[in-house]
Image (cartoon, rainbow, N blue to C red):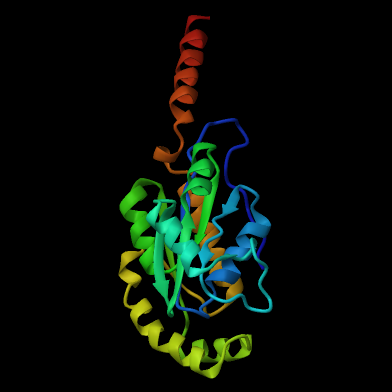
Length: 225
């Protein structure tokens, strides 16, 4: 995986965190890209979703998801404790509100590995803070192959995911950026480029007002010498 290149200035310029949303059809690579981003960039905090789906053998409760019952999910949803929620493949997923809002208040970047339904809800609530990326597979045959190689879902589940992929892929226009994952290193590099550019946006760096004001004061003093 290509290493992270930090393009931000080391100067202490205050910035507002961003909410990076990565979505894709199941098996297209969004979770692998998200995991690599977290490993290489400690400025990101992962938004760990709650889900009513059964835990896979490779998954850890509280790390990949918070696995809860349908009754627990209903209590969170009805109590407005979820920033967004969606039903995917017959299971419910949601983003706990408190953790996400705390991270944004502290100026940390939040990473959301969610589907298009959750992404749309986040965009409705916090459009100025959202950076959205949709990951596409190079072909449907390759998508099926990846799902089969994962060997964690039944044949029935894989077929359902492929049927749902058509609906998910149709939402690609809702995203600001689209990356085709025909090569994982190349796709990851593209995501890094997007993150670096978005972090340098003027409207995400309120500290620039004080920084440029100080520069202008320095210029005035130099002219008076």
